[in-house]
Amino acid sequence: MAAEFWLLAAAASICAGLVGAFPLMRRVSLAGDAISHIALPGLGIAYLLHFDPLLGAAATLAAGALLIWRAGALANVDMETAVGVIFVSALAVGALLTPNTEMLEALFGST
Image 1: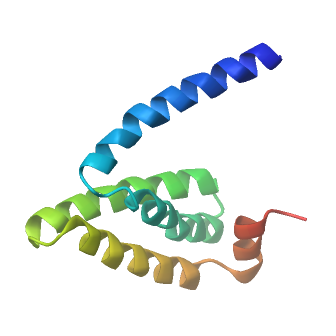
Image 2 (image 1 turned 90 degrees about the vertical axis):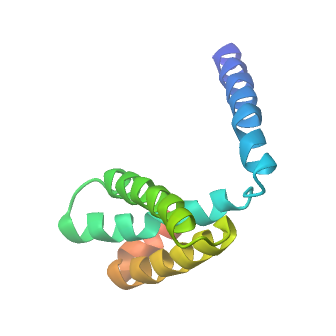
């Protein structure tokens, strides 16, 4: 079992290094943190509609990434500006949609 773990860790490290070089070259390396917070509205919608939160998060992450890409291209602004506006908007919508008990569970885990 330990051999599989180290093999998986090595593969993940190689993939992360290869993929991480592109955001670094385009100067959007902090976008990953902001994009991860775009999942919150998907979690809120999933909890309200009683379906798998991972599906809701994946859907809003894909939509958020496309929205950031289109907003940066159409508005002729820096990518950081588009990421910041969409990040804050998604975080606010997610905080409004997610019920308090599920919000605590999503942020800190279940007890």
